[in-house]
Length: 247
Length: 234
Image 1 (cartoon, each protein chain N blue to C red):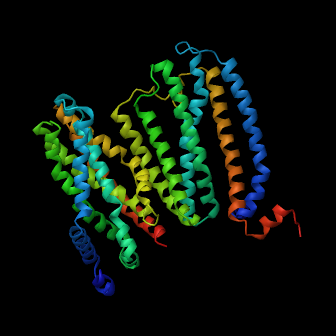
Image 2: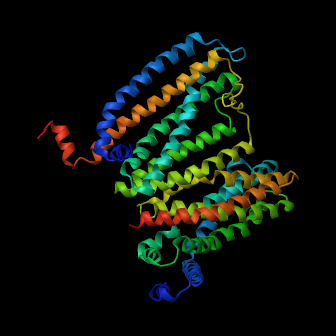
Image 3: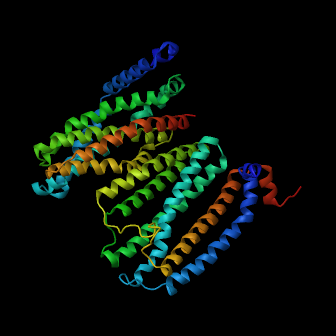
């Protein structure tokens, strides 16, 4: 088991592994997405207060969750990369950044589309919106720093430090904007004992969250495969693979 | 610098710290524009706001704390780029990295020197700008206290960004991109304390939080900066 895990850290084995596993995760993503979207848009009852427009939540909430989840993945992968010099972990962090940035942007955009009919304005400077915006800036800074270095491995190390510094700062930023000024409704799902949402609304939301996670997994694996080929193009196995030369 | 490295074996950590602090202070003081320019920038930016928004005393009093704080933040950012750059270019930074003493402590000496030359003058100058923006005289002490705690935190956080971008050509813009999001909490509590003081409210909470952030940055930032320097100077 441990040996298998160890082997997986090498780009060559990971590439083969990713090729097998990615289509299955993509299948999970597609089926849960189809079911979740159908449930969310046709089956789930309209909200007694917000009417139909609450349905944007089925995209908004999973993207907001993913925006934070991806950053955590990035920070953990960066720490692994810095501590054990595991090349693959550096690739994971780098490949995750644009995906996370897009999730963050999606959360902001859908939130503001929802805010117009509900709050009567596209944007308010409330705690969650502001910390989500700062998170987007952190993603952009990470990617900019990565790109700034000519030597990819120096860039990866510098960006890894930045990701870890960012993850220390995220809670501070979050609480400071929360105390600053707040208008956003409280979290309604994390109240685990008694969620303030009926099951017919909650289940599609959780299915959508699963689907978003599978989407991240799929895209991450694809990006990793591309990155491995790009960075290891000099090695023999890549040449054999690409030219179909099995000698 | 020469004597700290050649006789490194005999130099204690405390001596190395003071030597580095003294050297950085001397170097920057002799190159006047490095510390005067950010100050002038600070004054000009603050004086642009009344020109852009209008000279009404009520408005200026309302936006004053935020304006002074944002301008101070930008001025620290402007000075930050030079923190490691000249040492990087003339090779002194590599000697500092080679020293047997813990790099995070030496980094702290450099950041302290940097704050004494760029942060402290901002603090001392701020009451003058407060007067220009019609701030109440009772608010000035709060303004100075928050800026003193805040700019020190900003210098510490900023040193991480400066260390990460020191090896990058034209790193200045990149530096602001990295560091500004991390400055958000300090800005919020700093300007909020001044605004609350203007309304006659208690500011002990905000000052305690600023102090807490300073100590957190004091403990963690030099370690991150040291690690970043080792990556940048390879």
